[in-house]
Structure formats: C-alpha cells, structure tokens
Image (cartoon, rainbow over all chains, first blue to last red):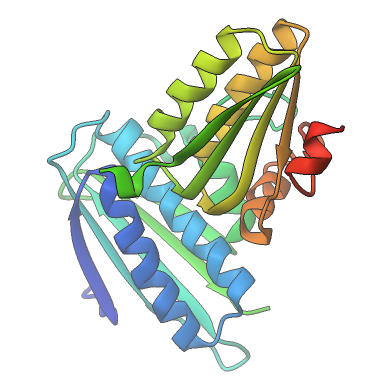
Length: 141
Length: 114
C-alpha cells in the first residue's frame, strides 16, 4: 500500500542530525495546531525513537539511513499527527522492544517508555524489505 | 565546536562543585556532559549541583548521564541537586518519574543553600 506524507526526511544515523528532525517536526506540529507543551513532548518521542535506532539498531554506526515521515492524521472528531520511522537495522521481534521498569532507577532504557507515554499508539514492525518500521500516532487532546 | 559546547562553567564551592549546562542536551551532547559529570563525581564532592537554567531541551540520554552521576554521588554519600529546570526539561523527568528521585530546586542560589 502506498503511503503519502506531508514531510519525508532521510538522514544518516548521526546524533547531530537529531536536532534537525526535531525542529522540522516541531514546526509542522505548530502548524497543525498542537500547543507548545504537546509539540515538545511529541518531538521528544521522535527524538527517542531516532536515538534508539542509532544506538541499538545501528549500534552507533553513523553512516546508515533513517527515514522519517510525518503528516496530519485528522479524524472527524479531532486533529492528530502520524509519524513513521524506518531503518535498515537488524530486525527485532516487536514484543522484545520494551521500556524498563521505572522503579529500577538506572541510566538508560527510558526511550520506549517515553514514546509510549507521550503517543497514543506506538507500533514496531519488521519491514518486508529489511529493517524495522515504527509507527506512532498522537491526537490533540 | 565551542558554540555547541553544553558545558558553560564549573564552579568550585566550599562543599562541592557546580556544573552549569546550556543548549540542547541530546545524544550528540550527552557524552560531553557525561564525561564532565563523572570526572566531577570521582572527586567525591559533598554537594554536586547541576544548573540547567540555560538548557532548553533534554532527551533520555541527557537524563541518563544525570542518573549515572546521582548513583555515583549516592555511592560516595554525597548530595546531587538539579536547579533551574525549564518546563520542557522538567517534563521528561516527570514522564520518567525521576522528578521524585532527584533533589530539584528553583535556582542556583537555592541549590547552594539546600
């Protein structure tokens, strides 16, 4: 099934590109009518998704592609945003992608928890052509 | 590049050290912050203050460096205090439920006298 998004970006897996994607998404979210606090949280969720691809998916390799797509996901009831992140990293069973127990205070392991806390829907799936696909949705509440 | 350096200043206090950070602390900046914090924590200060007043954004990699330093301080029976968190930065601590784990005060003056 073909997909159509308002914005499609391809970045290399370098941490210094995270701010570029955050700024692009924040600008779009502002235009979609999200308030500043929600914009910041959704940008954080995407940042965490990309950081996980860089750190865990590509294990720090900085020359690998990451595709980021986003656009409006309005329903009759409310406005929303739809974000997709795709990579060519090693495939992981989606059920193994989980955040850590928050009672266990230690560095790391917060990214997936943040994504699930901020977004209404977070789905990881292996791509048929290789790599992983992450789909996140959030409506204005 | 010096413009992107997240470390503004380190200040020796009578009972410890204060680290002042700036900018956006994400995966590209957190290794620099981690190195500074761990170096400071290794000196076993009684009080380690991190001033985040000029930090406009922080992701979980930045938070992880602070958690690591907190653990080091606890091990050394020292105190760690965060101050000056902007709402966007405070938000990630709340989402991760770390706002109750760290000692967080409004500003550097309050941190020095906490």
